Length: 609
Image (tube, rainbow, N blue to C red; front, side):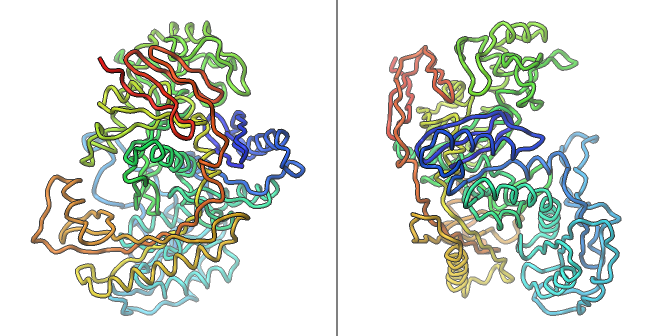
């Protein structure tokens, strides 16, 4: 089974294609997971006493714990003079022209930052020896987890290993930076290590509580691959985009099957909208993501998220302007039309009042929608359905531009893959605004993230910083070495029954021109100039190229693919039309036509005029 925990619904999809949606339980996310799995297992004749053999899970526990600051009390151990790096950060401000915008508070209080003697030089030589006994004697009373981040540990972790070993000898839960994010840039590496330590206690408790739900539990990472439960529990900072990553991976597969290897995935759920660029059938990767204003330097898909979903609340600001989101009605009380006590108007209420959502819609687990309640909520707030839709679609248009136009990619050459509970209601309007020729609505679009979990590949990522960026000698040997490490790590994972034992390994380089402070990921040095020209509009053919990191990712195909799921019967239509489905509703506006496509997808194109 594949399970995706969203802000409004928890979706469960079985290997036989059956689907269950249950309301999420934010106070205890595991309760909704158990309820959904139990409900689906009851309808699955192949389940043994309601316990699936494999549960592939996308979770929001790590994200919510960081956003709501519900992590553990963490101590930071670092070199003398570096204790405040985690707070000083970089010179850029959160909002350039807003003097009142504050940086997010670090996850480690100043009183819990400890500086120890010992230092390595950038070339790996020892300037001052480390004394593990000093770390073993630190006053860490009341601390639940410890983050260790020492200078240049990305190049040589010898000092970090000594300190980590001394602290673990005291029975402490320790995260060392070289184990989580062995990359240069002290601020980002320190924050990532501290965030992982901060999230580990609550996430470990939650994830290990899923042991009783299935024989084998796999967890989706931000990079769009599945990892074993224990690895996910040890590195929860890698789970911050767990749910959206599953949907992106599945959407990319459907788009490629429909003949569009280049696309933008558009996932609009109840709380947020996530978009991601797909090129040559692969979602764009990112070496770093900011979550809750904090940089997390771990492998991830380059998903751009905004606070605009079906549950986003519409209101007039003090100046009388209409705003939509980021505040959300969530699962409880939800939009006014849910009939669960919500009184503020949301995007879902606007869709219903505008006729995009049929008035006889029955929401899974909730019952029929209430059109009168939606219209009353909009009237009380002094807003119109068309106005709410226009504002939220403008925000989503900007999100798509951020992953296309801002990166030198013309959206007019791409398909838009619309999914999530609300995505197919707004896909054609976005495509019209951006000049995109085709909208693809995947089969089981409303639960596609759960499908992505079910059909997710196993992955293992490895990265290594390079001490001599301008010296390319030995680069091929480094790539081969890292590829072997990644392949061996994945080969050691217990294989899911029926999985293809073969492992595919790819490598990439983080490159930049000498003097630059940002990198681009490319397959090899020869490809850097063209990628730089695409992203930035120019290249510098005479400037030396620095290779600051080498990456490798090993992938093992899933035992089940989207093609293996039973086909979904789809009905075409010429707009204006509304196509209600079990897990979503597809809006086909005037000037568009929907036709059944490969894998049971709906392919929408403009009608010739």
